[in-house]
Image (cartoon, rainbow, N blue to C red; front, side, top):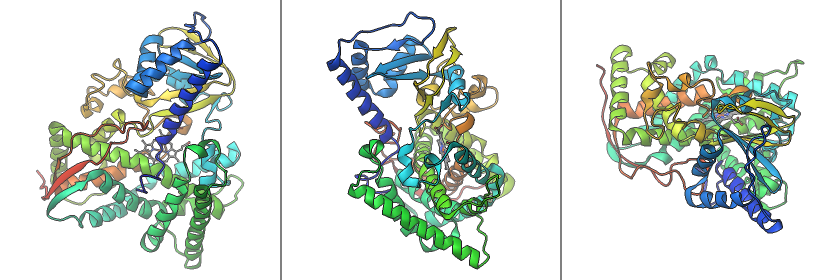
Length: 495
Ligand code: HEM
């Protein structure tokens, strides 16, 4: 991880949203006499306005954003609008309303310009620096590159990285699990996304520059991403140097006729519909974007899963028993098919991510009005210009879908229950859904399973620090502080 003082966490975005909201509410109070308007109209969702915003502000400050949205959901139902400073923010909660959020046509609902701050990080040639049709072709390159059918080849390098990394641990000791997992995940990204040549010769250099790109992202830059401050100058120069590293790698691969097994190679080989190949700038931008989006999400998820397992003796026993049975059936070797057998471990990761979604809120913009029917039986029109919010952390915790939603209970995904499936499409949205569903889902499960199965097979682990709280003051539910774990080497035998 980068210097914590400088490091921008994805979660800071949500802090920015909160700060912006608070400022706007206060401005609203000063500017005009405020009123609470519980909308009686049939046409538009209930609007939270005026003095009610002060109450919301107090709840945000005292109980946090999640509790605030939950209160509003209980009071107004699955669709409601917050109006502050003229900005209309409409929340769509639960599978029925989420279907519009995720599946609405791009002409009506899009990602808008919320992610424009990424342009100076990833470059003008990719993502939000380009037109939507080129962007969707580039998204397809990524989807193809991370397609589960292409991931088989990643298992071996992932295993090598994991074995090598944990071989450095002693016979017994104490570690910060959060730190260790983020380190090994960076090595895996280096190997599987960037490739062996970069992993072996320039990984430190790559990550030093990558951190400069990340550090250029701060609250000021969300609004003014191009102002000439030192952090932005370092960000821009780091991206140019990253491009040089990647260009050097591409040229070297070409001149030696080498073809990598990595995601970088898949982006190099990608072709637009008109037959054009991807440029060096585009490949650089896409690979920086992939490392960026994958880094925090996977680190947080693996750390939460580790903490949840070590805090739940029964769940830990179940996944250990599963490993013993798999070893008994397939031997100690792990390959793609063996990973698919780890269903109990899969549910444990999925459940950790249900309770602690790495991206707890998603946003979109409406360009044309649309109508929806709510679960409560109302028909509403959502006007053009509204910001739409899908609060994943609430969607994943609806009691009518998830029994005792606050309890870590991975078996809820197992046969006979399958609560997320019974709840209907969009009951579980930790990886988003529809057009922008995360293309890295299969890859993420794979790398987390490779790491955790290795730990379960080779170490007896105990959580020493208290079960972590979600980071206070941050919207993304990162485990707060260190996750201290004691370990003792052991070899799990098959049954
Ligand atoms: C546990 C790990 C992860 C979680 C929870 C996660 C979650 C998400 C979510 C919620 C979105 C949707 C954003 C939206 O709808 O606006 C997303 C998008 C995306 N994710 Fe992941 N992600 C994870 C790991 C990864 C990894 C490892 C990669 C790549 C190596 C990746 C690549 C992407 C990309 C490229 C998008 C953009 C898709 C688009 O806009 O069409 N993710 N991810």
